[in-house]
Amino acid sequence: MDANEETELRAQVDELVVGWHTGRHGSLDETGPAELLELVTAAHVVADEAALVRHRWVSAARRGGASWSEVGTALGVSRQAAQQRFPDPGEPSGSLPSARVERATALDEMRILRERGREGYHLVGFAAYRLYLEPSDHPWEHLRVASARRAKAIEEHEATGWQYVGSWFPWHYFKRPATDQ
Image (cartoon, rainbow, N blue to C red):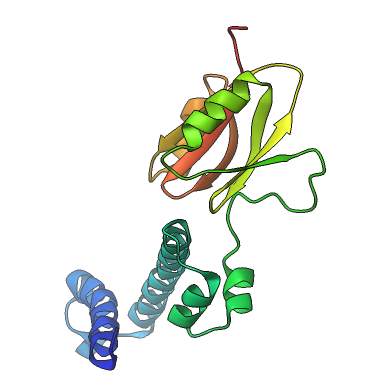
């Protein structure tokens, strides 16, 4: 993105907030303290949403093969700063001595989960190109659901016996002990 495109994008964000306000109250000429605070709140909502969108696109870039150095350059920070600020969302924290790590892509991860589930492994976390699986004494089923509404997807699937593992927009991962042995 060049400097002119960045300026245009920033102007569009400003227009989003101001346009929202003027659609509700009319001109900014007679804006009082209450309306100004409403503009502060609107800008805050836009900033929060922008942070979520940025995180989603960093995750998408990583899944698409971008290195942490490339992500850092795009953000104007170091590779290490990018890694610390945007950790892979489903990656388990701490050490998992008994975890099996499988290399996977969005195209083959469900096949891998199906096969390993039959072998008694269940998903405990995930990261770019990696599935973290724990052994157990019974087979497992795994499910990946695409939804922009994480809370609704969790509620619907937990109601039918699925255990939520984690999300990596737009995917939500679930598991449950297999019913057919």
